[in-house]
Image (cartoon, rainbow, N blue to C red; front, side):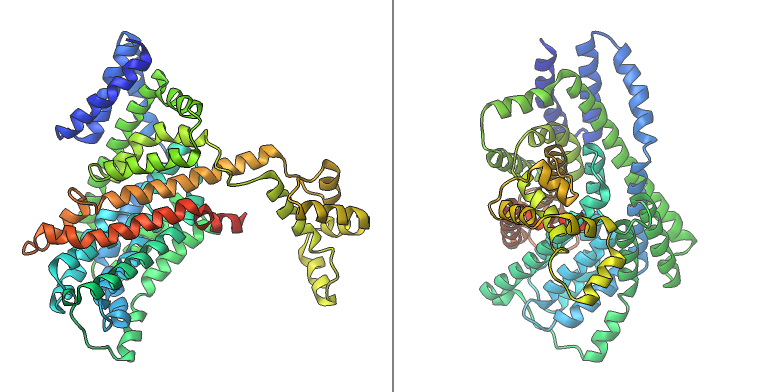
Length: 522
């Protein structure tokens, strides 16, 4: 067998091990090790890679962000932040039809902003919100489905552990991925609220009523949410503003939530040790999966499976949108069977080269030149005296120099080129003092595609967590309510799955929704 054939044959072997309930990290490690020994006809390369891969994986500075975010989530739970979020959301929404369920979604979104884990968000908010939903007469299946769907917000709304892993795998900027996931995360929460509203209108008996809370109590509950806002603003805002790196931001967040938990009485010597142990176990599990994936992906790279697959797909002449749809459908199906981290570690090294080779036309040279030119030309127009003074103080001197030296016919020719959607000539760009080349456009578009694809993959994989029959979030929440039949949860959760699919279609059709924050900051 050729190396390529061995690489292709490794997939069914890996799937067999996974379905035999061999841990995913160990499965990838064993297949990668065995494949390297077979391809290289000996153990020298495989054992040499075992030594180097282990060191490079566990000495990676970027991976230190993972235990920090996990620890931050544990401290947030101990500090009562999940309860505060739910009480605040319930105070404003609970009296509406389906309002307690909507409050659960809002609390999940808020807790996801300081947790970074889907399963942890589902489990934590389940303990807080499920008794309240039962108390006010919400149907068991509807309650468990709501909390299972809300749990998926934990990994989409920044910060997100899985997005960190994706950024490392594809060599993307973590802060930019967090920024781009923000709007899709808010859309997810809004879509779930709409799904709840539709469900309670179709099945009025599934949701009880709750008396309105006095405004004084609402604002009092809202006041107790300040720790969440403080930590989220400090961590995410600090990363975006460049105050510290994502790893430093995660450490600051863990320290901040720990301090708040201690002030609230939830953190003591016993719970501190327990938090460290739980974080260590979760980190060890994640790191071993990362190691196994690194070993397996190194074996695939040696067999050239990813490169050959990318070349094959491109040679077929398929539309990039068709290829993207097929890949997302694959993630939707297998997301029901595997956790999101394992799916991304296993498949991104294979699918990312395919997506990177596609031209989605997200940017054009003429469009970027027009944007840069308009930034200069707007200062060449007649302006008020105070505006001119402000521009002189705040803008580079070259901006006014270009405006003063450009001939009127040059300005008109540039405006005409922009109006016609034509590319600017080298002389026109020189007069404007801008430099927008095709190479620069290609680099920016490649980054946009990588970030957009990462957010889409994360969303679709998370849909798998609530897709019957084996969505993991469904089992976690249903285990907290043994009286509710799983079939009732399955029926109710399909409304949330439909909301997710509609959101994915929107984000695929309009990439600018995901990329808008990134475009505004560049």
